[in-house]
Amino acid sequence: MVSRRTKIVATIGPASDSVSAISDLLYAGVDVFRINLSHGEIEGNLDRLRRVREASKMTGHEVAVLADLPGPKIRVCPFPEGGVEMMPGAEVTLSEAERPSSGDEICVNVAGLFSGLAEDDQVVLGDGNIMLRVTSAGVQSVIAQVVTGGRVQGAPGVHVPSERLSASTPTPDDLLFAEQMAAAGVEFIAVSFVRTARDIDEVRKVVGNRAQLIAKIETSAALAALTDIVSASDGVMVARGDLGIDCPLEEVPHLQKMIIRECVERGVPVITATQMLESMVSAAVPTRAEVSDVANAVFDGTDAVMLSGETAVGHHPVIVVETMSKIAARAERQASYRGWAARLGRHQRGNWNSVEDRITAALGNAASQAARDIGATAILCCTQSGRTARAMARFRPEATLIGLSPDETVVRSLRLSWGVDPMPVDVYESTDEMVWYAVEKAVQQGRIRHGDTVLVLAGAPGSNSSAAADVLRVVQVA
Image 1 (cartoon, helix red, strand yellow):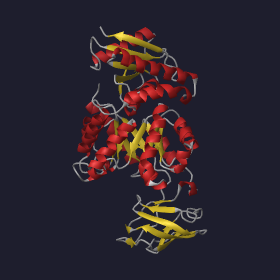
Image 2 (spheres, helix red, strand yellow):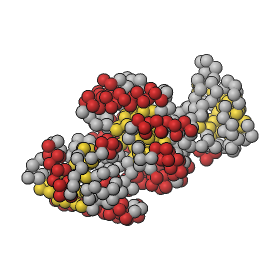
Image 3 (cartoon, rainbow, N blue to C red):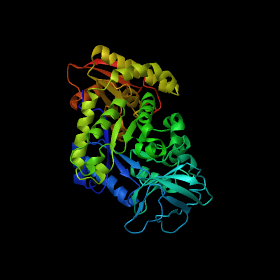
Image 4 (tube, rainbow, N blue to C red):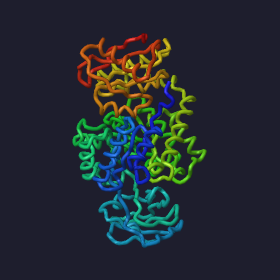
């Protein structure tokens, strides 16, 4: 069994975007690099992608790249230099106007942002530091009371309830960025502020099959449409920052578990994100609460855990990744993955849309049980699109899970899926040839050894990417 099955996503930023820094993070255990398109110009972010590819080639570590679209980020007009202090209980006017904000009036240059607000709606500035409650609704301005005060400065983002927001998603900039990043060859594109499956479909029209789409679940509207969104997406991110603003904070841990469960049952990779090791932006060790948070995400069954500012602007990017890796590996020794597999076997019929998906899921269930019964060392998934390996990963097998594909992009994309050790292979003419060479290459790469018993899960060679995995072989490695 490999030392860590949960994958690590790390955000690249000023503290980590040189080739040498990226190489160090690869050695530390990063599986996927995130490029946050909310910051910097597109050309600078394309340069970051090129540096990731250079570092990957230098180190020999394959890695996937996730480009994160900014979405409709709305900011207030700037406060005076030095900021202002918002006192709890004070009244403030929220206006749709293009003039500087002050302690008495907060302005936004976005028509219709406040016109849909109703009494008792919550408005949040920044990352939740300043909370306001609407006391009197109007057409172009509303009156609000400061609930949680503090100093506010610059031009912080403003968050209104998602059901009141009229801004469309994805934005025109999102679609432009998606096209540019897909053309540059990223494996994943994360779509921000998703509210319905149609938002994913709109990006899919631009991207096609050049990149897989990750739906960021960060609104109450997305929760209401979760099943459809998961079905339309190639992956999901539990974006706990905005989710904790749009929903009551006490609900976030329970929503996290529910979203992860939905994704795992459907074989869709899921990332748990936001403030996982936040204190390590400046500190060399995490808080005890943060350690528990990462471990609990592993217990929940997440495919991956994500670092944001910790690696983008933090003082100790490599130490952060090493720390997260140790926490995840220790939690996996305690996780009840056999319970996952037993429950998934009962649920799989209702969660797969096509006959091909149901065949693949059924064979994955059989492979999971067979691996336990015979004490298999590894399960080798031969896959054109990665779907067979992802379907197998949802059972969280104790055996080493190896994903083999002739498509280099698929190999890199499998870096996001729980437990999958991806490996490139050639295209073969027959099932027998494919099984033999898959086992042989896994031996050559040191993934399995002579004397091991392994399972090989595959579809017919040369079939299209939507074909079912319909072959399961037990192989005694000679």
